[in-house]
Amino acid sequence: MGMKRALVAISLLAIAHQCAAGSGGGDKPTPPTLSFSSAKKILKEIYKVHPQTFYCDCGIEWQSKKKLVPNTANCNYSPRNELTRSGKVNKRAQRIEWK
Image 1 (cartoon, rainbow, N blue to C red):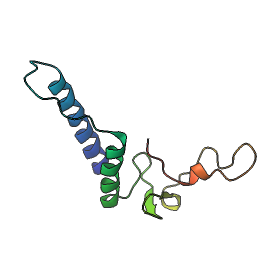
Image 2: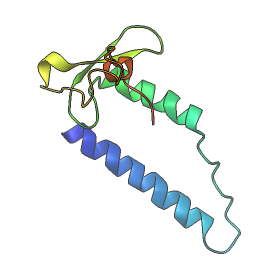
Image 3: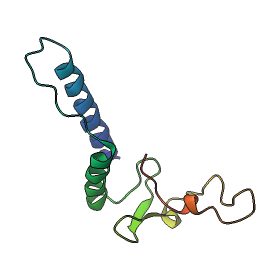
Image 4: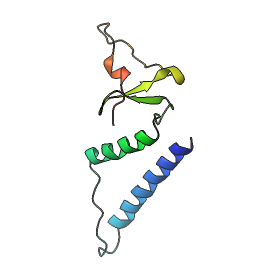
């Protein structure tokens, strides 16, 4: 839980800093906007150190450089839709997506 609070606090401080830098006298340079791809790189570094999901504390297993899979055995997580409408296994429910 402590890591979640720290991540939320850091995020809020970064947002507050950007808002404060964006408003005001115009003398201050505006910090560069963080792109989605650069945010994903930062998150990968965070999750290497703390391999647990943000919402349900499931452990994360790295199956490849880009593929993250939640370890649902240790956190009682079950996906909402384990099967697709056609009855096939829902592959999206078996991986972690960056949003």
